[in-house]
Image (cartoon, rainbow, N blue to C red; front, side):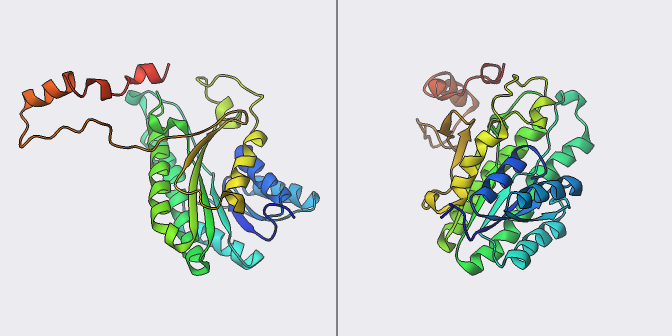
Amino acid sequence: MSLLSGKAVVITGAGQGLGRAFAHHAASQGAAVVVNDVDAGLADDVTREIRALGGRAVSHGDSVADAGKAAELIDQCVAEFGALDGLVNNAGVNYRAEPRADDPVRMREVVEGNVLGPLFCGTAAAKVMCDRGAGVIVNVGSGSMIGQRRAAAYSASKGAVASMTASWAADLAAHGIRVNAVAPVAWTRMARNDPSVVQTPEHTPERVAPLVTYLLSDLSAGITGQILRFRGDILCVLRQTAIKDPVLERDSWTVEDIADALDGELREALEPPPSARWK
């Protein structure tokens, strides 16, 4: 029996790249898939590919940054396949710009696509999953969440994805719902269009897909609230934001006290400067 037999899943941004690979792999493991993409033609193409291989799939060609369309996407899965077992929040956009030259229109597009899209889909899915007492949400994050040069809007959006993953995992565990995130490394259209990305065509989206299938499957029962970094050859867990020791306490703090602390006891706890993290 395949890992996802009898399960119905929604995958956003599945018309190409990582989303397409996730949809194909999930279908190959028995899942019925709703293939979403803002480009309806691409969603239709992937749906036909899956069906040609003997899988079950339907397409949805709207933007999940619209709350109504996101809700319709979740409803479509239930209407077509009788259930919603998994949601993969993959749809997203990216671009590079110096802070002084950033464009408000593009910033809004990133926040609406990368933050509101997953929020709208996730909250709509949670309603269905809570009623069933089971379900899985997989958010697609990025290592950029720690702050990447010339990518403030994108980095901020992926930091938001990490936060919503932790929040949902805590809130939904009592309802039998697991929520995790993946931070994939893959050679996609988005990567090809980014001149700062090292060319690694061998790291295909297809190599990343097994991790998402694992998280959607019952093999990952008990795994929730995690961010997993995966390239197809390396796998690791990313640390969530947390307080670092030591924690200093005084009845009151002057400016000079704070300066002394950061030059003294807290010096070793300071993070490396951004230039050391992003070359």
